[in-house]
Image (cartoon, rainbow, N blue to C red; front, top):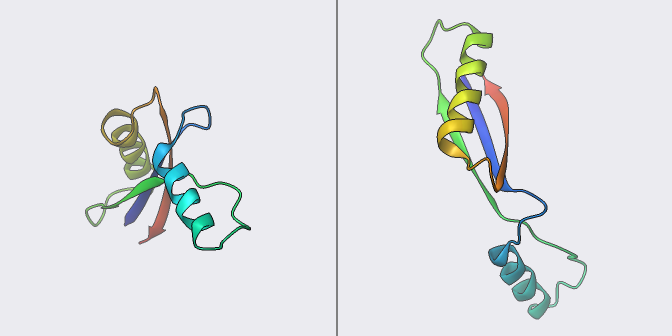
Length: 82
């Protein structure tokens, strides 16, 4: 199984990189863009034969403890494939 963990800044946290990207896009004539928020993702492969619910639970724990800073970031886990 492969899980993808999306990590992004919480809406209340300023995103200077997103603002810089938005400004650059406007400078290139892309005036329809109203806002940009940057983030990152991690693709995590789980060993064959592991129960999906157990794997998801462990990936959720990894996301919370290691991949995201819960003070300033949100995360979302999705199953990409088996």
